[in-house]
Length: 209
Image 1 (cartoon, rainbow, N blue to C red):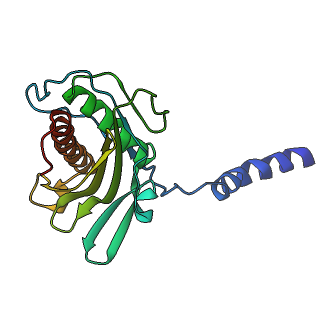
Image 2: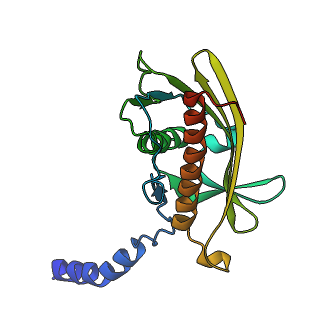
């Protein structure tokens, strides 16, 4: 009889025990990881070349862009890091990867290498890139600002490139992170066009701009 009473008490108390063990639902949001993509020039977009080879060194970034979170600068002097949108690879490696693919296409060559790979011994052009800005800015646009240094045949060609691209959509909520990353990829594509023209000019012996 005593055993039966104990069993009854256990059965009655079981719902209370289970209720006390309920784990609250997590409010953690898993971040979305993004990669820059090689969009390629519109149309053919390539320049007629002889045998061309190049190497893209490690891209230099300011400290705030070395974080894996996407960055916004809604106003002057304010930098915001986005916890839920992150780069799926180190940003300097993503930029050099896209630069290599796009420049190789434009210059009609497979004879190139990019950081973190080693520079080929027979490399003709050595490219150093310093990125100063690469983020979303207050007006619903992205901004790329970079300094390039092209070494060729003992000479050095330096130039500054700035590109601003407006994001689609009229409201901030309509402008998704994927649109932002595509716009950043487009800015690199246009930067590659700029670099390809300078390389072609130096190969042809044209004077500097």
